[in-house]
Amino acid sequence: MAHRKTAGRLADLSIASRPETRFRIRILDTFGERLRGLLGRRALAETEGVLLSPCRSIHTAFMRFPVDAVFLDANGTVLRVKSDLRPFRLAACATAASVAELSAGACARAGIRAGDRLLVSPVSGQNGNP
Image (cartoon, rainbow, N blue to C red; front, side):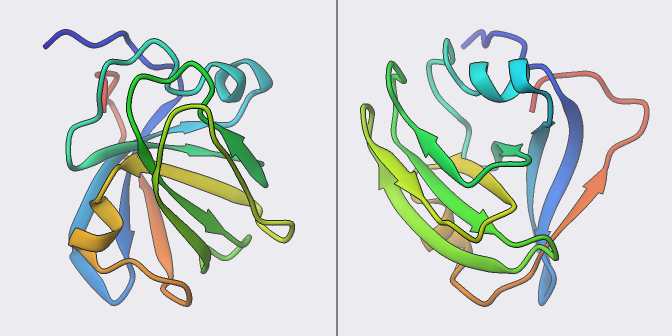
């Protein structure tokens, strides 16, 4: 399935206590990148997503698929997980610094929960989609 190219820098997202669990993400840290987010995508693979930063709230208006939203503080600690956020919904966490949007069910499969610490590792020399 062809995907629209997503802007942003390519990185790996992993759980500090279980580094073998990895997601390939795009870091969306400009206003335009965050505004566009995943709009136009048909789906996410099980191990891909985006990291919106800075960000405390998200919407899924006009999206075609549900996502898991992981709200993180500035140190990468998971503050809240909102699983299976369907299109045309809102989610927020007032103290979040960023939000990872992963494929629906990814948090349950990986065991991501509040209190976990997630690590972002940039992937150098890579420009492909997540």
